[in-house]
Image 1 (cartoon, rainbow, N blue to C red):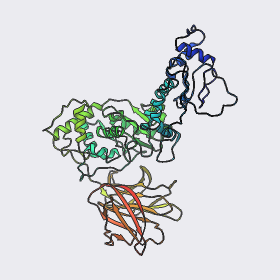
Image 2 (image 1 turned 180 degrees about the horizontal axis):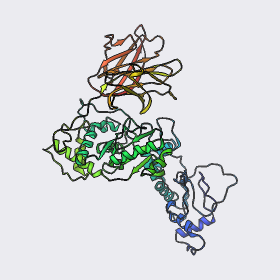
Image 3 (image 1 turned 90 degrees about the vertical axis):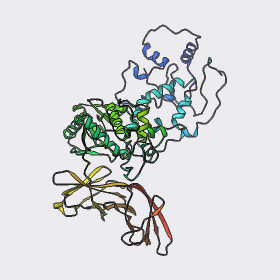
Image 4 (image 1 turned 135 degrees about the vertical axis):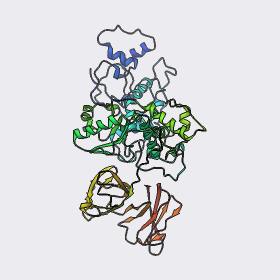
Length: 578
């Protein structure tokens, strides 16, 4: 059979199509089932093409997902057209038996929203543009598709297209677009803030906002089932996104290490275990249309909550290695996602929260039934993102708290050839440091290389507002230190934020324009910071150093001034202080 032509023009049915309409309207009997009726009957009934007996293509295409299907007609034979007619926008054709037959539909332009693609934060790939159309909120493409279903000519085709697009839309929610659905590395709620998780829904856009409570849930799970969960941030060859919660079930973590060793190249994980409060945030963002979440499972339903699933980007070169170690690849429906065989412990994670709540709220107990219902949902909304005062006890005393990481001073400087000299000052216990930008390791140095751990790196692309980290390790290989910063990788004027000690940061300009005499830094739109070096709020040295009493995400505005005090301009950055 000749392949179907894709057309953007409304088409009046052929003679065969008119016979088909008469049969649909009950005016003509259907022919006997001879020849090869399977495909034709599937088209007449509007059966999902995936259920036909014809073999599906091995690689999904735009047509197989129904993205062009709304513009095709299934009436009669398909004949090639030598010269396409002049493009004219008409209303939908209506069969003779439909209400309002005989009157042409009014001509009207397509809604403005349906002609304008959903804006993306950067140059989008083909798959991202497809995802943007599939998961767009009401009022854009999604609403246009629903409106199209109300016309007799397009109702069955529109429904078929939406059904075919559903698996792709599900995959869009797990694809790593920029920071990934977990959000950026920022948004950690500091211990000084008294937010509830429900309040964090409207003030944060990263699952790291509930990091403290998530750590308590892991401790509680390991109390209930010793050795159930293991960390994955120490696996050789595996890099994690800044917002990835670094746990999997122990068997899955061991298998992930084997996958990394099998291929021998670096793997970048964009999502791993997702705890109950983290999934709560994603689902509420999806419900409220916040933070770019187009699709999310309800709490207690995501397969990431079992600690058996990982998302990897790029994924193509890893498929065979994952499958060889017992992981299942979901294919085109969610290409970055791999599931490991193992026990489903999603209900166990719900029980862990219920136990923590009751331990801290004996006056307001809830059933410890491992079921996510209205009682558990309402208490989860009221829980503190930083964790409860009383955490896991494992039937004994309070758990041993994780050791505090020592602060590392971070430095960098752009060289004449475009490379960056990287330096760090760390406590004596630190023997080795790893330099990391946006979750990727870019270099490392030992104390034997120099007391300031010298190395250099040349970036392949220049981008602003990148997360810079220095991880410090002792002689036994344990991480004991951390320093963070914000780096603008650019040849021109750059904003920088560098950690200089415990709660101490410097915010300033690199390669400031000629004529800049003073710099002023305002935080959260309210407070102007005094520079503890110069003692001035308008610093003459192009930077402001300040010791912060409140950590977490802060908004910074850097204003430059001429020597006569006149204002030149303002640059804005957002950064999470740790």
